[in-house]
Structure formats: structure tokens, C-alpha cells
Length: 199
Image 1 (cartoon, helix red, strand yellow):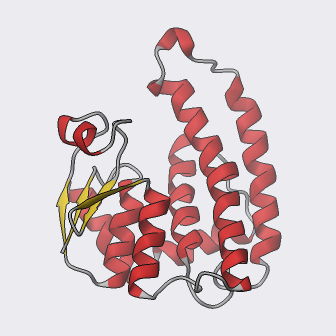
Image 2: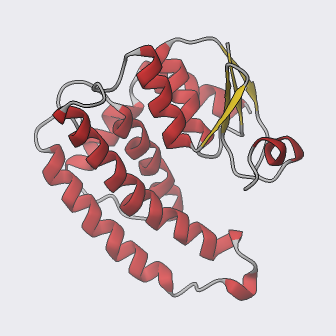
């Protein structure tokens, strides 16, 4: 059984969602960033952390890819061209979508007030919009980013979609908005969202 450490109101939600999609047994310890348990497991104090086989795995993207690889679902096999395309999309989302949202959050409430640059958010919204348009081209008429099967990047992008709405970043009226709606309609998402709401 796995132990997920981190509040579902953070990026730990991605791991929670993946665990629900896979139908795995797990224990949830809803700690917040920089809590004593988190700092013991991850020197940066960031969440989430997954305890697997007595080892602590950090970073939400690394964790969900590990789970997908280990359980042979929601991913293409390492060393295949399809996996290279999957990783390409995943890194783009992490760099360009998550990166914009995280930088905006840091300059809104995370950094010490004297270190924040609120003016950067206008540029971040412009970058975000441009990246959403690029993802729309990659999505095309597919149900999911890699075609008709959900993979790891779908969880990261859909999570970022919810984050974007709450942060005031525009998803536009194109196919990404409809895609996010499909993703949050999944039963695995609904189960994870219920746990998040109750935590």
C-alpha cells in the first residue's frame, strides 16, 4: 500500500487522482508544504511525497509517471517513439502551463511581499494563452492528448486547468476548455475531487 503525503488542495491532487484511476490502495496524510513531516521527507519542504517500498518519491509529475510505469497504465512504454511524444507533451505542460501558474502564485502570496513582482502576471497570462493555443493544435480532434487513451500528461494539464480558473488565467473557448470538461467528468477525478472537498 502506498502513502501519499500532502494536502489534496495542492499538486498532491494529481497523485490522488492517479491512485484513484489505478484503483490502488493508499493512505492519505494531508500535510501542507513545510510541515515537519514533509521537511523530513523532502528537504525543500514541498508536497507531495509518495512513500513506496519504504522510499520517499518527490515531485508530483515524477510520482504519477512512476505509478503509471509500475502499474502499466496511462503511459506508453519507455524507449518507444510514443513515449517520447508523451514526454514531450508532459514537459511542455510542466514548463509552459504549470510554470506560468506557479510563477503567478509565487508573486501573489508565496514569496515574501518585498520580493514579489505583481506586474509579471500580465506577461504570464500572455504566455499562458499562447501555450494553450499550441496545445490545442497538438490535441486536434483527439479525446486525449495522445489520442484515444488517457496518459500522464492529461492529469497534469487537467489539474492545471482547474488551477488556471481559480487564478484567473483564461483557457479560451476552444477545444482545451471542452477537453478539461471531459477530464473532470471521469469517475477517477470525481472520487479524488470528493476526497479533496472533504479534506
